[in-house]
Image 1 (cartoon, rainbow, N blue to C red):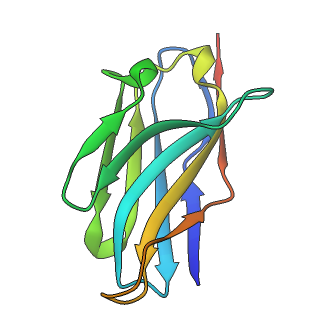
Image 2: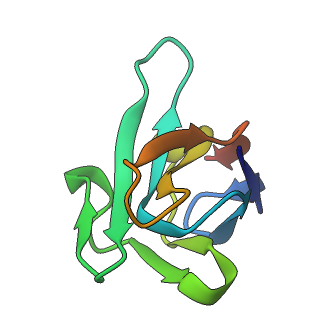
Image 3: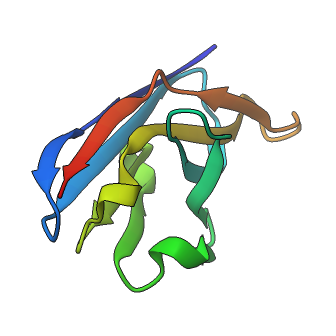
Length: 121
């Protein structure tokens, strides 16, 4: 079993910055993809960004140029640096990891509980 814990959410004014962290622990051989999703009230969960073990990065168009994603493979941790925040970035941010317990097993997907980000205008 893998545990995924997010931290770093909070309340910030528009134009401000926040840094989210997500740490995975448990039965982990390796983690392929580490991703951030978000879900605003009344909306579907959407992908914000992901980073692969090899360093491939994808961002949603809505956050390009404002957000950065990075990971520390030794710590099984992924970070989301959010700059120039807008009220429309307000959401619960969820971390998702695709990890495997052995070299030959398939990737399994694990979610964190989420962390609230609120951007005031």
